[in-house]
Image (cartoon, rainbow, N blue to C red; front, side):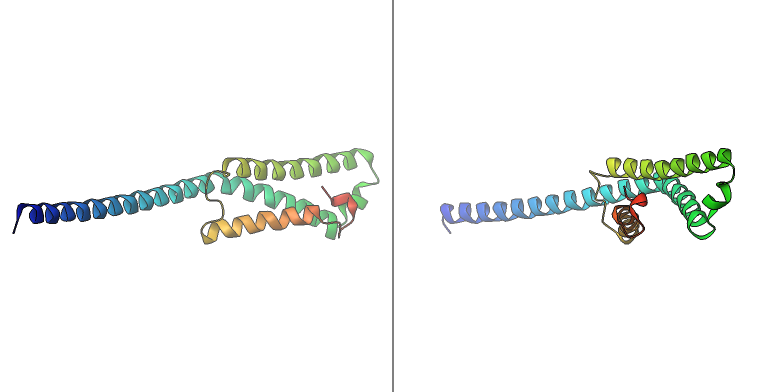
Length: 143
């Protein structure tokens, strides 16, 4: 074999090795970045899930009492209790919307809709938002 043939073979082997190394490095960088983002998302939702859950439960309880038990009629006899009812209702609505705003602001750079748990959280928040935007329950509940 001539020197030029050996040089071409060595160059081809070096090129193949470089391509394989670059491919493996790219795959490993993608894999580690993906797992880092998933870990960040788990930490994020672990941090905020209790707050949004409690705010949702407070709001659900208040709306259930208003809709099914008609507590607004019960409290309408005394103006002081009615004021407290309205103030607390406004508070739980504001509390829920505040936590949703915080989650959306902090999660905007994370992959918000990846994974089954995150999809369920997103769809639940979207369902509540759709109800607030709907006028099926009268315009007084529309935001």
